[in-house]
Length: 213
Ligand SMILES: [Fe+2]
Image 1: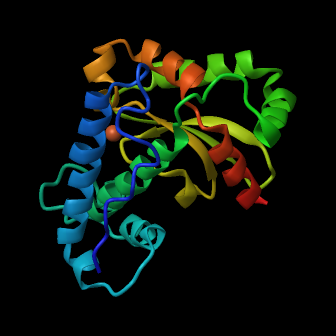
Image 2 (image 1 turned 90 degrees about the horizontal axis):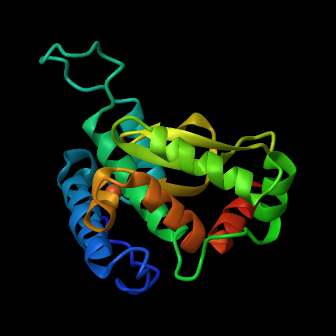
């Protein structure tokens, strides 16, 4: 099977001025395409017949790397198949979590749940930004919902993807440095504030909420 680069849901320059065309192009055509190319070269994927990306991720989660380097004990090191397939999922989710003229006060069901659980958008926004600023190293900030219907803001280190932990993803923000360094250099907090205020896609969040049932 062969995975194809998913279509970006807007033009490369549509997120300006929050994210420049150069920033988005490098991220989408450089990083995401790079992960898809690598995944397609992996024997498990190349030899598989049709398979969902989620199934590949779960297969990778249970496949431990060869421990010949002796750095980490088997079982604690995510496999390359997991890391790469999870990143394809995360990137795709991230680009769908953004939209031109998004952000700010949430609309629809997500707005009601945020108000009920966090008090108001401003309190939620502060927590979202703080979570991303405080993440040490590379990773993701996820808004997720659990099977009790409770919303949480969680950190995902490196390539971690919430659904393997039975948390349904609602939105995410990439806080790997390459996601913002072209436009914001080392000012991660500024990037997070700008995304929260100008780009978060509440329609996508509401769609994910409705699937969470
Ligand atoms: Fe990224």
